[in-house]
Image 1 (tube, rainbow over the protein chains, first blue to last red):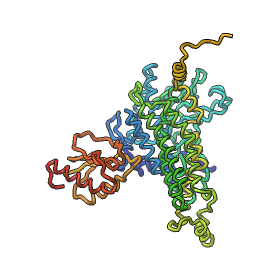
Image 2 (image 1 turned 90 degrees about the vertical axis):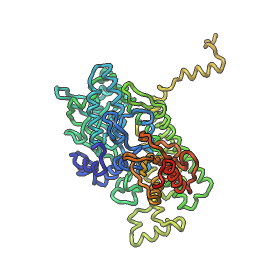
Image 3 (image 1 turned 30 degrees about the vertical axis):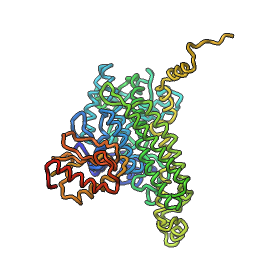
Image 4 (image 1 turned 180 degrees about the vertical axis):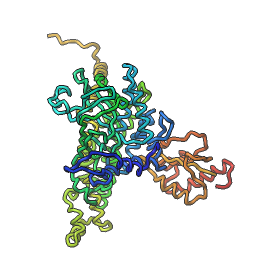
Length: 485
Length: 100
């Protein structure tokens, strides 16, 4: 079974004995519960479109391990073409869902762990990469959805993991024995975790010698003993119990994040890919972060395609589509969207092979992509709000629209142009509201790392001395002289 | 005559290759098959002119729709279907096939 169908994916998630809670209650089936179902639907598209001839060129690829056709989300990039097609796949999937389908995080984790374990084995004579190859083949052959699990709760951000008052604020090894290791802690903001098959745990930051126990990379089933998931509360998520008010009823808002608690979870050695080699944590974080930041011009580009379409439609429904300032603003939204996309294509095209043969993006350009997303998505949303009008924030509810006495007033007073029914105008307004408010915007700011994390990487990757020397040469400064007093 | 069909992934479509393909199948008696099956001519349907669809690499002759072009010549969105049909028939003839 190299390519699961969407039904096989759903059934495989149903079979897991997941320990998921939301609103103080246990969720018996994430596939069917109103809070989690939209996110399952979005992830499901990564399986469904792999079987569609119109999309399979992006969705599938030949495994370099087995030669079999696999879902691209389980692939290790073998060329810059693979990196570019990843971005295109993400844009296309976002166009279909208007939201996050969650599977890129695990995809990036697989690629980061692949190249780093290869280099660890070469330097340290360990066997992590060989173990990882077996795990990767298992993932590919079963078309598994992996949650990339990097972000720790972090506690006091001014302190290293081992300096925290509570040692569990970063995931750490509490026991090591003949059979494997036992880990404790938690991972925060875990996108797609509650509807993934497995999680791939990685350190969240560069580590020092004192943080040795925190240098851990390993794979765990999402329903392993000791694992507890507390599903995050999103903006307006009580609307998930209705339809029209959601805006994007089928696929919801962003990834459906959770806090995943690891309460003394046992991991057998064959699933351990880093155990106390603290010097390698920083490299793994950088690789993962760069791969993940590469994505955002693809996925947010696709989401913005939908938002541009919604905004232009709203302008038509409002009867202002021909106004020059509206057209200028729509053009600006397109320009910003393609700027995001350009960065993702650029950092992919400038990719390079690692020692393992797996291809890695240009990290400077990948960080620039994500930095742009923290700004441009807000501007795209602002322009959408500007054009759509205030009703996206003041509309009455679906219940009122359907109410036998109130409905006629809503139909009458929220009418736009004559040829479009009021409900359709409300639907587009709700979609814009869904895609531009609360949780959706915050994800653009902090997903794949907060803006300052990118600034640090950008400063580190750029050769500032080279730039200074360029300027000095043109200014005619041959050798710097200290001013004599 | 069997024609293998390969789509690009439709990430930023300038034309609707899915509708184009449906109309083509409806209007020609040619047998169209998946690119992984056996065929004599490969029809590539790329939704923009970047034409990034991966080729199966089996050395068959190709007819490439990429955005509003056919084999890199402008065709125009309105006439794309008719021009594609003509080009397919011309290709069949060049390959020594009278029928479809």
